[in-house]
Length: 320
Image 1: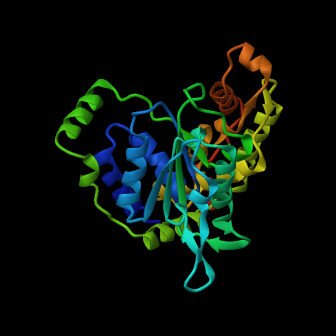
Image 2: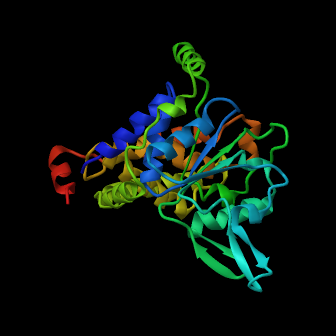
């Protein structure tokens, strides 16, 4: 395994996004795992900057849509326009016809527009006037949303949340990092410092290599037990679906790949479990009354479900 290209990408993103190395690793991992990313946080913490830095560092064609209530599905999928000269309808590309689509404040738009994006995320295609058109490859959606309760927001339905491989939060920077951010902004736009270090073809090569990472049956069982525990927890009304288990396995492979291993270990699962599982859990009413969060539940499950023991000899057997 050679993850040097991924490390170069993250190095470039670090130039524009200060003090968020852990978030950058998680976004890179999800992209390698062929997943879509939801960044749930307050305005102004660098969500959009991170998405644009990734697209620039990977040499991807990117488009951005600021979601508002008046954004229509056709803005995402495209539409047909009648040409008087030819007497035919001609397809006009929508914003989703790119490699990296940045959906800013996705929870401010209508459910109909959200559903249009849903097909693109799940199927890798859009349908206009009964004709299905493939999206360019690779295709990644990085969506941002403001916390529920902010003015003009509405919760995404569970079916849409489940399409995002991970949901992460960036949080406020610490004092030192905030000083660096202000100093960097006063000297110009930090995105101008980001240079493309790979191409779309290079990203797809990394995705194929990550898929070849070996996962032992004991790890598959461990991931399944974690997910089943969310369904059986007394504070959970709706647990994680099998799609969540698949996402956990793909993220585990991608993280092992970033660490230059051709096999996964339990620590890989634990490192990304919360980012994959928390947003897929619907809490029961008694959890809200007792101020229990999905994050707390997943932490509890990780502590209770025993990890498989991987000794040195076991690791040798795990290698393909």
